[in-house]
Length: 152
Image (cartoon, rainbow, N blue to C red; front, side, top):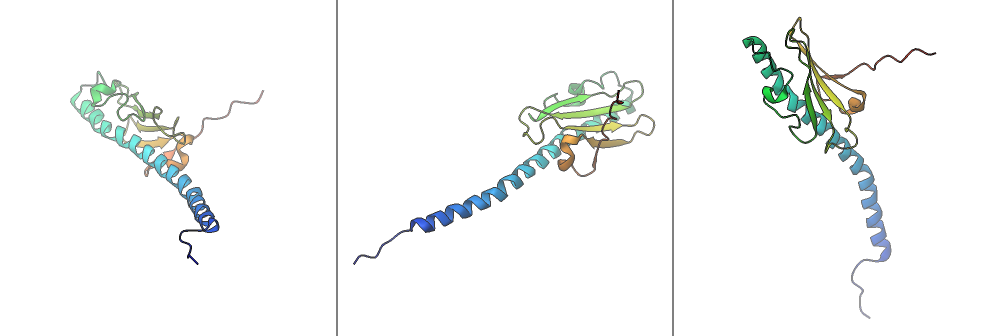
């Protein structure tokens, strides 16, 4: 009698079940990893602009602080979203803002990372909106939600 070679149907079904269980665990973990990476990439895209802003403020060339191309980047620097600047040329206060859109994952699309400069002290703070609560880069806090409108 010939000895059979290969796998039985039950053995193959067990392997498929194990792969399914591993995928059910690994895919969400990987998606979270991607979301954290996108948030960190967004912060890394606007962090160097702080130096450009400080340099322009120190040299008195503040006529173009709201134009991100004059700060050394493009509005869509890495394809994940849009960079905007609201730095006030008179006071030096304002924000560098990265809004995740474009090729950002669904978990981060619509997320906003803001580097805000205090005009009086010159210090920068990083905040993220509620969409990025679980993926905020280290050093960034979650911005307070706007107050609810009063009940009628």
